[in-house]
Image (cartoon, helix red, strand yellow):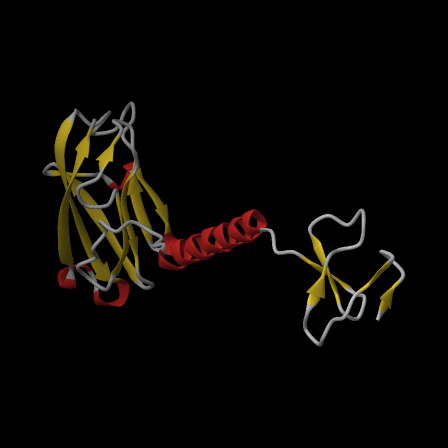
Length: 172
């Protein structure tokens, strides 16, 4: 076979390669005249590392957990305890409960039943929260451990059917 591109006579069988044409670096010329690129090991390694990185990121995102792992609700009527049991909070942090539909209640903090006029209630969401502040029975939480007791009941059943959940949190 006469190869006009490089001016040489080359005898080649199927699947064999010959020297690349002049000016084509990193390529091999096949017997049919087509140029096959040479595999660049650095690029192949880089592509494999990028694929591995995306795989690790995807795996990490699929295993991620949302929410507070410390929050272990002990009663199905409680949807959220704020702060979560064992949490560390600031002196003016809001505390309370988010209750299931049709529930209401009140809070006892460090043995003090919080008066009704000091709550932030969202009846449509069944939330009962208290934020310490000036003029409140608790103006600020002192540093250290504190105890909250949520007393709650299903509205149609009344306070006589109340249940209690107590947890502790810490103030920095």
